[in-house]
Image 1 (cartoon, rainbow, N blue to C red):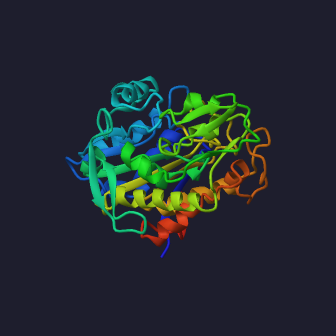
Image 2: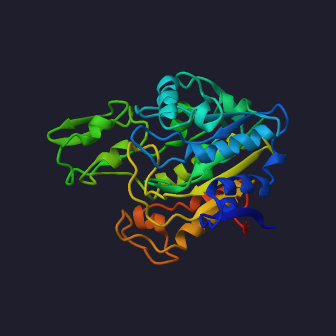
Image 3: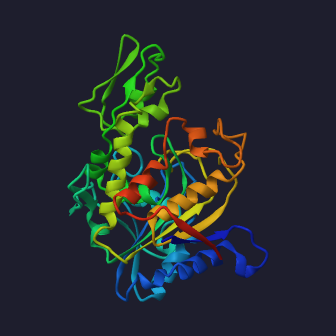
Length: 368
């Protein structure tokens, strides 16, 4: 059986075809009102963007979801979890400040912000999943405690997972730092012949796991948490990971965490993917690079695997931008995420998600 995925393009010729109106119509078409009961404490999970980043979902769009949830008689709140790295979202005080700076406050977005894993990431609930890599996962306490959940994802590229959509938003986004660390099994290493000893990697390491010795960077794997910040910071591409043995496990571990994030909420979770400003990298960076393909539209579904599969296909159907980080596969049908990060296999999260029962990759795209 195919999972329905509802799609609205960004084309508009009248007031009732505005993007704002389409967010509201997608909520209704996908049947999200059936997921939210009166007096539900409804978590609206999104990414508030790192300071300096502007690729995140507009709070104007988020407000449409907030108002729809409130019309169901529920009590919506906006939420995310603290980061492993030392940016502007590593604790709840700075995280909320960043959210407000980006327009996610009651005045604009219409709902309060609650950082789901608490002040320093210690608000945690253990969820039993009994899967290949994890028998139990750590989920942020206030996401676990929420009665219902609407997951809003900015669909974009990622340096390790290929792309980030609903599955990654559930996995990394609903996990406290200890859960994020558990997913990051891979550890980067230095390629000495490429390293110039510039110390760019050392400066961004949140755990002081990198030192410069004899003008080469050295990574202490006992201290390393596998956040991959060093890989992105290195101007010489002198830091790499074991793509053949470690990354497939990372992708599976990440997908199992997504399963754990929703396991205790059957029939209470909805997903929207925003295929707008599809950047090559995550919104965790303190900047947003140029998009790799044109803006496409917004999707809604009750199935996280189906919505990511549909999003992946829609992105790949586009003609890629030559004046972007996209290095290959510009043609319609080419894997755009491999065109940015050639060693990634983003679709692995879709395949494994289906394998463990998170959802179905076979979808029906319904245009509204």
